[in-house]
Image 1 (cartoon, rainbow, N blue to C red):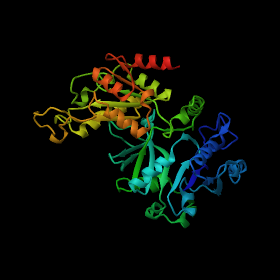
Image 2 (cartoon, rainbow, N blue to C red; image 1 turned 120 degrees about the horizontal axis):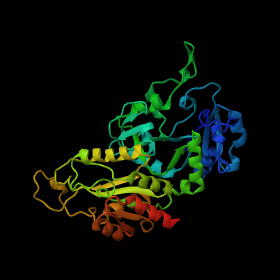
Image 3 (cartoon, helix red, strand yellow; image 1 turned 90 degrees about the vertical axis):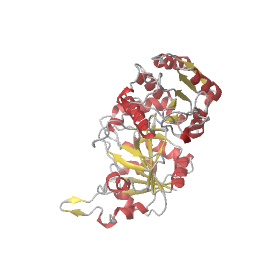
Image 4 (cartoon, helix red, strand yellow; image 1 turned 135 degrees about the vertical axis):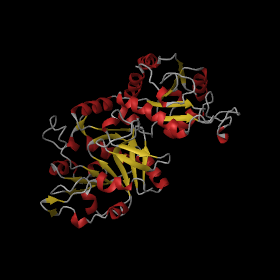
Amino acid sequence: MKVVIMAGGKGTRISELFPDIPKPLIKIDGVPVLEREIVSLRNQGFTDIILTVGYMAEKIEKYFGDGSKWGVKIEYFVEDKPLGNAGALFKLDLTENFLLLNADAVFDVDFNRMIKFHQKHGGLVTLFTHPNSHPYDSGLIIANKNGEVLNWLTKEEDRPEYYKNCVNAGLHVINPEVFDLSGIKSDDIGREVNGQVQKVDLDRHILKPLCGTGKMFCYNSPEYIKDMGTPERYYSVEKDFNAGIVSAKNLSHKQKVFFLDRDGTINRYVGFLRDIADFELLNGVPEAIRLINESGYLCIVVTNQPVVARGEITTEQLDEIHNKMETLLGKEGAYIDGLYYCPHHPDKGFKGEVVELKMDCDCRKPKPGMLIKAAGDLNIDLKQSYMIGDSDNDIVAGETAGCKTVKIKEGGLLEAVRGILSDNN
């Protein structure tokens, strides 16, 4: 599969640190970020690469040449005038699915896993999405449970009061058929009309119109990808790289996880929580989850929610409660990497109960089903992971799954996380 890497941007925000080199040649621990991308791709079997270049193109071409030094073949498309971040794609001879990446992000992603997802779902486009620490100023993707993208909200657009932390990361698998669907003609791109050069914006002109058509899906993953477009983010990325976090989060490697119960661990315990107004984060929880995010561990919530089987709330109402949780955490710079809930309940006889959910299942804690499912989905090493909760059911589920366990009292999450991370250091 061909890989197209967009390497033509100026990087105006980061230029105060690196005024004389193009953004793709900025070094992370002594190696240009684009070189790290190319090596990662080569190691996964992707060796046919096209670089679209513009700003300081000659420096990029001089550094990488034909790519043979790195065991890949590199071709260049040089934009003599800006065509927009997707204009070059119309000029290239792309006839099959291809990877489209940005040259100014630091990532370590199992792309073969993403491509399998793309092929399974049969869409024309697959977006790589993930949670991040600043969803309030990022482009949000709204998708259904099958991953079909329903809506795409830029950071400038109004958004719901509560939303899932699902952010577009700028990595894509694309079928060239989308260019025909756009109605844009290649010959028009770059032409001057009324003093304006005709440009193509990838998100606005190509991808966003696919929302709700069933042709675009999101591949949600906790793998590492961060833009280094500001000095603050550059230093953060370099710190993560030196700590080994970047490569460790590639899902081809075994992951370590903090599994967290919800009620009484993350939010104030109010019995069977039915009303979204009753959801309230406990003190210290955002800081605890930020520490997990920064540690290289994944943070996954596993929670029994029998109120669904009892007919007291719908799955849509439960999703909105969880959206509130993710929104409140996001405002504090924290995020969860996954959420699993058990909607079942073994006892019958409740008014309005959902009969098909009344069962003795394998996922309701103290059984370990949710942890086992997460381990299969995300390549988790359960023996190196922790289950933290406020009930004996949490502890039994964790022990049965093979995790280390910590039982806490309400409000004790921050102390527990600090203790674990301190012991591990």
